[in-house]
Image (cartoon, rainbow, N blue to C red):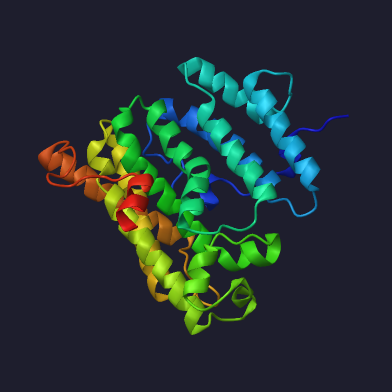
Length: 304
C-alpha cells in the first residue's frame, strides 16, 4: 500500500519557526491557503531532511506530492488540500513547484561553491514563499524584488544558525566554499566545539552581507496595501534584524543565536506595532523616498 507522505512529518509546526507563519495578524480569509501551503512545504522539507529514507525514496515522495498538487493521480492529503485552496483563489501551483525543486536539490546537492550558487538556490527555496503570500493577498508583483530580498535573508539566517546541525546530521553545507577558503578555513572546521577565528570571520562576514540585503528589502512593509500583512512583514523584518545582529557577533557553534517562543512573540509584536502605529499616524507611505529595493540578482551585480 502507498502511504501518505505526511507519515514522514517531523512534528515541527508553524509555531516552531523562527518567524511568524500566518499569525493572527493575517486576515482569516487569507490564513487557510497560507497554512495549506505551509503544511505542504513542511512535509516536503521533512522528506528532504529525513535521516533514514534513501535518496530514491525521498525523490519519489516529492514526486508524489507534486502529482497530488497537480491532480496527476497522487493521493497525498497535503497536495490535495493545497490544490483545492489554489483552485478556490485561482492561483498557480508554480510557487509550490519551485519549492519542490529546492527540496529535490537538498536531496542531491550538499555544497555551494559561492554566493551566486547560494542565491540561485534561494530563488527556489525562499523567494516563492513570499511571492505566494503576496499573491494570496492580491498585492502587486512590483513588491516581489523587496520580498525576494527579505525571504532570501530569512533562508540564509537559518543556514547560518543551523550550520553545525546541517553539516553533522545531513552533511549539508550552505556556507559558500569560496568564502571558507578566502577566510583560510574549510568545511571540517564545523566539526569543532567552537569556531576558529578564521571560521568566525567567515560566518560574521556572511551575516554582514546578509544584513545589507535585508536593508535593501526593508521597505517592503511600506509597499504593501493590506495593513495586516504589512504588520506581519514588519514583525518579520524586525526579527530578521535581530538575528542578523546575533550572527554578526556570536559563534553559532557554541553560542545561542536564536530566540525562544516568547522572545520571537515579543520582538515580533514590537515590529508589528511599529508598522500599525505608523500607518495610524501617517497612512501607507509607500516606498521610502530615495530608496531602491534591489533584488538578490541586483545585489550580486552590485557587489562584484
